[in-house]
Amino acid sequence: MLDLVDPTGSAAKAIGKGVLEHYQIGVGKIWIMNNLPYGPRLEYEGWSNQAPAGMVQITVTEFQMFINKAVSELSA
Image (cartoon, rainbow, N blue to C red):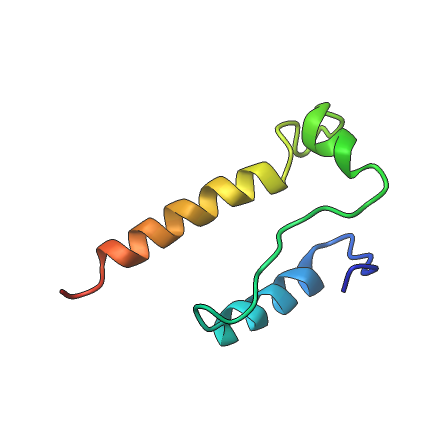
């Protein structure tokens, strides 16, 4: 998947959803990255009009919020 070119993001989202659905705590790691050649410019230099604040940094922050919400909804 590291060489996937997916302009719409739909294939990457589908693959990511499959990974998360089958993930088991303590088994493996999930990496969130932008491995495009211009990824650092997108993440740190505001190089995109669509995502001037980057993508990976925002996803990491949102992911933690989703985890916190899910944990808070668990019955004790």
